[in-house]
Length: 159
Length: 104
Image 1 (tube, each protein chain N blue to C red):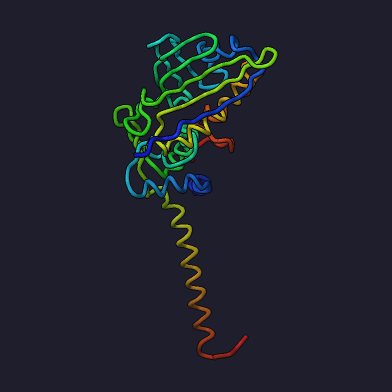
Image 2: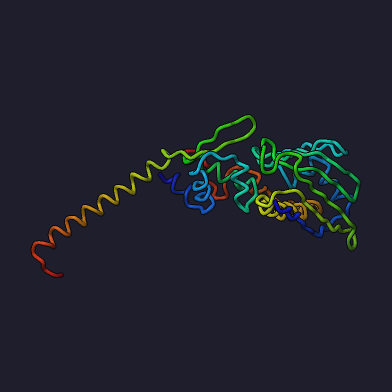
């Protein structure tokens, strides 16, 4: 099979790297932008586990933790044997100072099979935008993807 | 029936049903067919399940989905009723029109 292209996304954040870095290592800060519950043991070999919506759970392992400029972890979906199982892909985040007190964040997600690339890319665009609001102290609001209910406001229970 | 109609009134949910017509699939396999995030697919699966159009089964930690044909019964009856009425109107119209041969 053709080697899948990595996802590459960049964003400028109005907060210094030290501040942004904590949003990848501190569970209380992590869930401000991604997930409902985060279990983060931010050291090489430590667990990276994020429950996004009460159903979809990302699980991986921290590979590199270099404050305040680099964090690398593996990524996959708990309970998945094919497609994107835990540990099967890798997310690399680098933070560089930018301007006066800002950060340029670069994210690279490698190892995703081609069919899963598009959905993950869409996810990173969505979640990095939330991080861009949360890291400088803003409120990105409730995550529309953080619930199993749809935006139409009707519960999906059978009637 | 309204729940089924609302569940069907979304292109991706229709596509999920088409996929499941071919057989049982895991959430991951379904998600890999769309350029949509995994949580968004879970929302669609929740809606389809709530409408009784699909059924979920746990296999260890995996979640498998299959179609629930009975979920479409209400809608099918509704449409078939329309079809039957339409046919009887056509029958009546042709029966009254044919013998006299008059034009309107």
